Structures are given as C-alpha cells and as structure tokens.
Amino acid sequence: MLATLALVVSACASMSATQRRQIFTDAPATIDANARYLFHMHGLIVELQGPNAQGRNGQYRYHWTVEALADHGFVVISEVRSRTQIQTYAATVARQVAKLRAGGVPADHITVTGISKGGEITVLTTAAIGDPEVRFVVLAGCGRLDVFNVSGGLEALGRRPQGRVLSIYDRSDREAGSCARYFPQAPGLTFEEVVLDVGRGHALFYTPERVWVDRVVEWALGR
Image 1 (cartoon, rainbow, N blue to C red):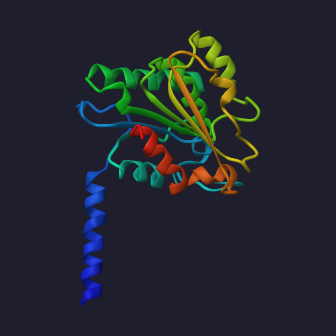
Image 2 (image 1 turned 30 degrees about the vertical axis):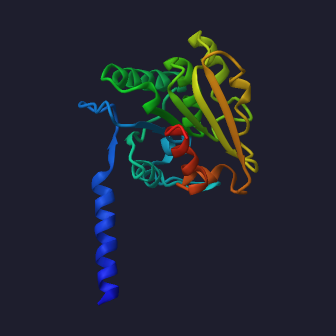
C-alpha cells in the first residue's frame, strides 16, 4: 500500500510540474511583466535531423532540455527551427525580446541561451539586443573554427556586444572552445566563462545535465 501511495504521489508531482510549465515557440500574446523569460536555441544537428537527433557525439534530447528549464519556473521561448542563417535568427530573437520589454518585462528578467549553433546565434543577439542588463548563456557555442562567421555577423551589425554573458563549454570539446575573443572588456558588458571537466565534449549539452543546467538557472536568476 505504501508503494502504491508513493507512486500516486510521484505521479501527481509529475503532473503538477508539467501543468506549471510555460513553453512557447514565440513571445506569448499575453505578457506577464513579473515572470522570468528564457530563450533557448538548439544546435545545427536538430535543424538537420529533428529534436531527437543522433550524431557522432550522442543522442540529442531537445524537448527534455526545454522542459527542464521550464521546470525551474521560467517562461521558456524555444522552437525546433528549420535551416536558418545565424544573423537572421538573431534578429528574430531581438524582436521577441523587444516585445517583452515593451510589455513591461525588466531586462534582467530576460535570458537568452543557446547550444552549439544556437550558442553562436546567442553571441550575435548580445549585439542585436544591445541591452547591458539582459542575460545571455552561450553553451559550447564558440566554434574553434568560425564556421558560421560570427565575427562577420558582429561586424555587419555594427554594434558591440552588451549584456551579462556567461560562456560554458567542456574542456574535451573538439568543436567549441572559449568565447573570450568575442567579448573584450567594454562598458555595458559583463563576461564570465566556465570550463567544465566532465569529459563528454559537445555531447554534454545534448541532454539537460545538472552540471550546466544549474549554472544557467543561477545566471538567469542573477545569483
């Protein structure tokens, strides 16, 4: 009987968490100015194969990640996007952020995050949004080779990065490394970088592991 009760309680807790999740593919029509909003952008592999993509680095679990972020109380804005140019999508996110700001959401209640190619888009949004109080987390998003031409994208925007930026990557990652080259010290910009020693490389960010999710949450909450 105790085992049955435990299962019921567990199921109810799971249902409660699911019911509380607020996940949108665009800025919501009704904006809660008191909520905290978190944008999340996936990697190129999801553009090519979908949300459960299988690559050489492992299995991608996009929906698990979005749900894990929403379970921390954020209003999550994320979509399984089709093939896109990073400059184009950065402009889309900047417009969505502008809508939230116009709806009364404080800048420091908005966080933009992205993994891999999504992280490269995040780098561009720091300049496209241009707000020193908005928060950003780049997850394995600064390629050792600038395949998507982030440098050119920043130059085309004609504005320098602004905001509170955190970069996280795994030391064993052969594809992504430090973002420091994009964020030289400047007024209106805070930059920190965390190098993890998990040993999973790029695949670390394919699933919602606490070692990085907790850091995203803490950064988004200003802790």
